[in-house]
Image 1 (cartoon, rainbow, N blue to C red):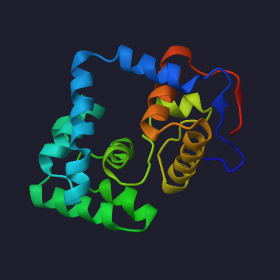
Image 2 (tube, rainbow, N blue to C red):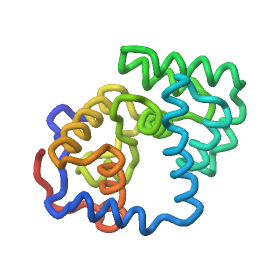
Image 3 (cartoon, one colour):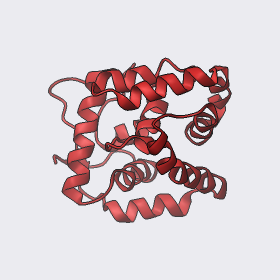
Length: 185
């Protein structure tokens, strides 16, 4: 991310309204998949790692076309990597270690943290990047991602919404509108 580029929230983004639209426009299958991820959260937080089956459910929700790639991971490897990621205090290690898993790129890694880490993390997606007026990088890196995380955390706090609500709203806004007039948070 260019150091002079600042993420912006659209002037006409009504967080709750767009988050509700996201939910209304979900297919029944996507609702089932997302609800399954939400249902798994407390169980995964308690045990401190994902299983291969958990990872397959995440991949099916985020990127069904490439979900088969996560099947290449050995069960023990998934457990070790995710346990390590969830336990580390280092933010860079937390996100980048997840990308060691087959089929897990930056966007998929952010879904894992979004749903299954005790801290608040946004999901990185080209639609959300568009909504907050950033240029889509050729390749994600820690500096870009961390600025994005901090921006989303500040925005969620400023709008008094949880990270899931903010994520849904930003995604839906882009789907409905593309880029619009913006202001800084």
